[in-house]
Length: 246
Image (cartoon, rainbow, N blue to C red; front, side, top):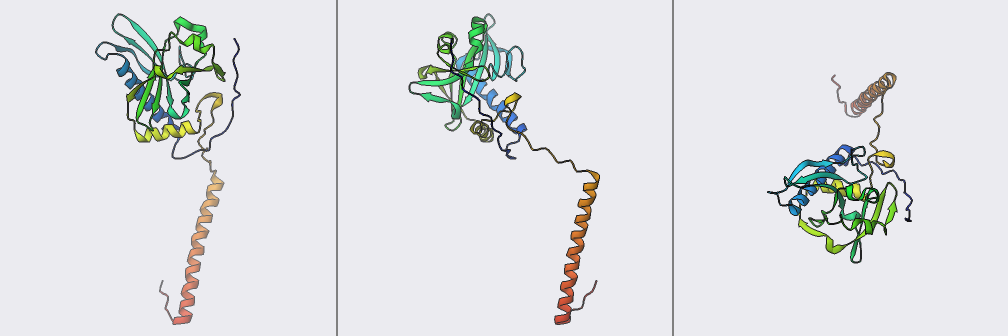
């Protein structure tokens, strides 16, 4: 099987103090969880199917799945049957329509693990339109589609999925979280691993001598200010006879 390989582009994103890394992480977690809950309520009867495994955000070193597999992992159960799910959650800005298809990215591990791999829920948040699209019927179709896909750096494969497999949910999000999500998406910000490209500026460590120099400069500045005021009083006294008291 042959794949076309796209070469990665390396770039450092200019730091924006309005979007610190901690805020990006918090907003991303909130949006992923909110989107996963909306998907779960829409796709499984809530009084029958329960979460045996809580909706868990995946990290780069999660076990047995990590961020390269999906964004969220959960197991739903009706007491008799259990369905493990990996959820991949995208922003509409990175969701590519191609005619009657959407181009989406899935883990290359679908080829290796096949039947043992969890079901895939593909969620697309459309915050600019206040709605959400989801597709969770990829399990039986994934292998045939992935064979025709485009391999991406990092173990992902871009495949085409018919638009009719996606369903719409009305959904609203926190505007603050959405703004953060859009900032991250527009700038292709990566926070972890070798692809990390967004860094908070390091705080400058000021040594004792530097602190003393800064203090002296401040003191000199104050003296210069007082000296300028005295010169002004002298000028006024010479011109108008203003008496200086102090």
